[in-house]
Amino acid sequence: MKELISNISNFFYRDEDKNWILTIFWNSLYIAFFLLPLGIKLPTPFFVLAIVLGVLHIFKSKKEFITDNKALLLFPLYFVVLTLGLLYTDNIYDGIKLLQRSLSLLLFPIIFLFVKEDASAVRKLFEFLLVGLLFSFFINLALGIQSTLEAIKRGIIIETIDSIELLETVITGWDFFIREEFSRLVNSNYVSIYILLVLSFYLKRKLASRLQLLIILILFTYLFLLASKWAYLALTIISLILIFNIGDRNRRYTMFVIFFLAVLVFVDNPRMSVFYNRVRNFTNIESYEAMSSEKSRLLIWDACIKLIGESPFLGYGTGDANDILLREYATLGYEHNLKRKYNAHNQFFQTWLQTGVLGFIVLAAIFVILGRRMRRSPNELAVFLILLISLLFESMLVRFNGIVFFSIIIPLLLKKRSILSSRIIRNEPILGNNSK
Image (cartoon, rainbow, N blue to C red; front, side, top):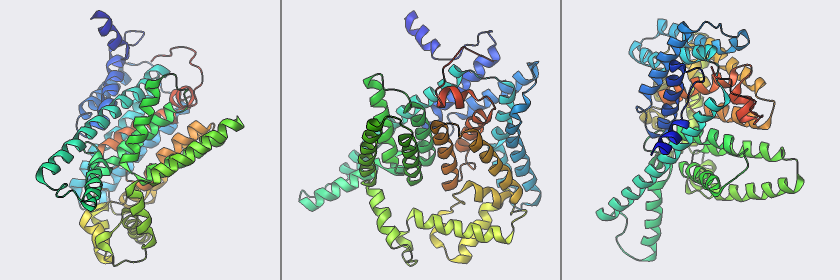
């Protein structure tokens, strides 16, 4: 029993100088990362606890932050710009709610200016996130099986035993295991980015056991079932980057073959075949009842561009962006988008609508600096592309799960001598424990 407790305690963070503030700070983040794929509200108390302890550490710490890391101050600046957007917004309530959710963008980057992380501490963030993803996979699998069994009991699926009905049974049953149906705990787009980042961390390591191989297969299966097209795009790009970087010609050829076979599997996803059919009929604007997510997203961006053109400098206010967008849908006749109340589905457009060109410049500057610092290796470039593509196809900074995740991961990557970037993503040797 003592050995079990010891093994569990070793999985958590213990500060070498027995600093209880940092110990609880990192362990709160670990638990929060574990809970991220399991629910929207579950990790919130642990993130709040980490913020409180991080601020307390700043006041107790005698160290000044390293000026090389001043790029992290772009996040507080972004928060200030969002706050200024309240001055000319009509929907104050939504604006204040967004600011409340965005507090981590102000606080975590400042905290990381004073908290010096070590490789072991940061690596465990990914390990806890991985465990959370595995838990969420099996929970969603169980929920899918339960839904299938309930449908069978209600007689929705199996009514007859002829071949046509049997085929319909397979198709209908499949619907309980794909996209939103297989991500009932958290939005599928957030889960997809969690999986991609964990994969980018683990794929560069040699498979030392069957357990590691099984875990990677589960993650790929999870990503396949979530059927997020932007995630498929990101996975394709980073896979090609990593394959082209393989020095051994025979191994590179083998990986190309495996990649080609994997592509065949992913494009065989029923949701992708629906996507191909709808792309062919994209110009048919009359088919709103069968509106594809791709078509609706392009219409969203069309509305965003028109609105940005009308008010490029100030935007429409932190709380009014979505309301203005809905009015534009109504004006343009985009009834499907209006009914679904879609936001910009692009964080750069979303920010521009909220705060005008200033907010866009600050957000773009964060990713320009991040891109310059992460071009040193294919592994770093792959992680950068995952983060960038996710913001190009989704408004990731409107929900707490996306905001808090980005407010931790990106500052850790932006630091001048980033442990996350060099020793974990690039896999440089760990020379020692540089705790605090």
